[in-house]
Image 1 (cartoon, rainbow, N blue to C red):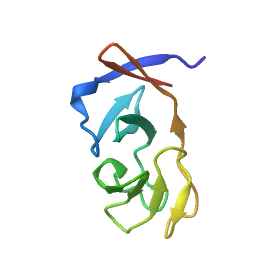
Image 2: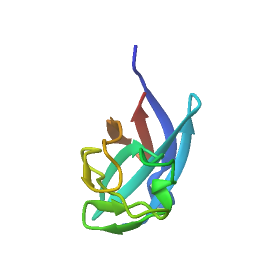
Image 3: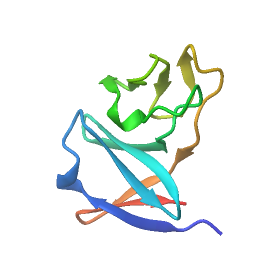
Image 4: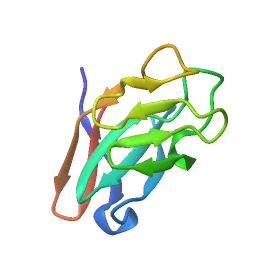
Length: 102
């Protein structure tokens, strides 16, 4: 059954930034978009690029390896060469702690 797990603190991820966290063996990319936190799989579905290292513009992240574009709020793929989206995870803030549901 999924549960929320503490992965970071709110001051760890400034607005417009991202960070990779590992939970139960999964690499998850956390994004701060204008103060709203979002979590998706960190691994691009094209050839495995690290999405947390990609360029963030609004709610879109561009994979640093080959330029696939994903929506960080849904995990949906928005641009090739990736053919499918990535998983999205629920995020909540408890005080200063960021928690992801896995």
